[in-house]
Length: 37
Image 1 (cartoon, rainbow, N blue to C red):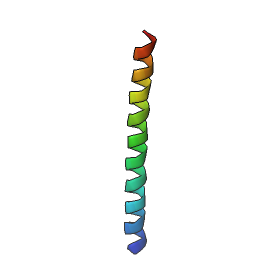
Image 2 (image 1 turned 45 degrees about the horizontal axis):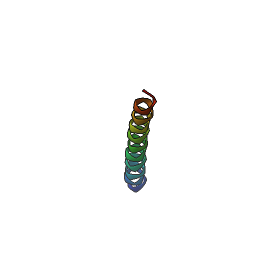
Image 3 (image 1 turned 180 degrees about the vertical axis):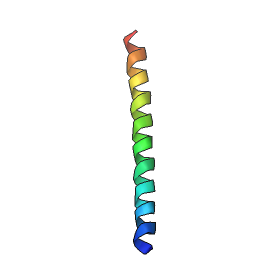
Image 4 (image 1 turned 135 degrees about the vertical axis):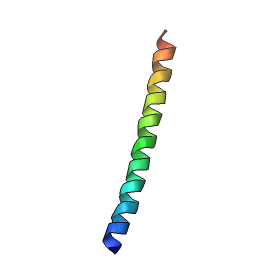
């Protein structure tokens, strides 16, 4: 049971970090395309 909880915390943290990276990449991509115009 303890391993499941640790895995849940680690997986949740990794998921949040991945979503933050995806959001930051999307914003950077939008900024780059705006400066090209």
